[in-house]
Image (cartoon, rainbow, N blue to C red; front, side, top):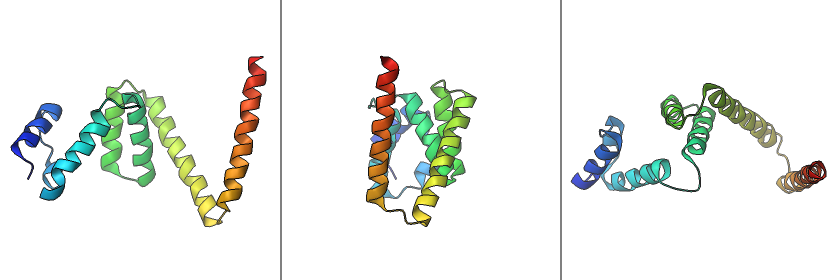
Length: 132
């Protein structure tokens, strides 16, 4: 059970204390609320739009219907459109797909990093040439 101060803060922030938060074990509730509050609603490096889109992508990739619903609604609050939500899910799908190929085929990480660095250099050079 959260302290009265924490319960009040949750209610002031969310309009209620969600039932799922009631299931968090006593030793973890204060910390869990702090993480949720600070990462979801805090003024950090990422905008609300970016946080929502990342949340949607991760939720889709891990197959969590709870997180998918929450983060889609979070993103919509930040004026993310349906096409952007679909693209975030597709990007997450693509990342998971290629991760499966890389892991399943046990691709050498050092070689992968070296090739990626070369591709980034090539792409950056193309951007410089296009700017000229």
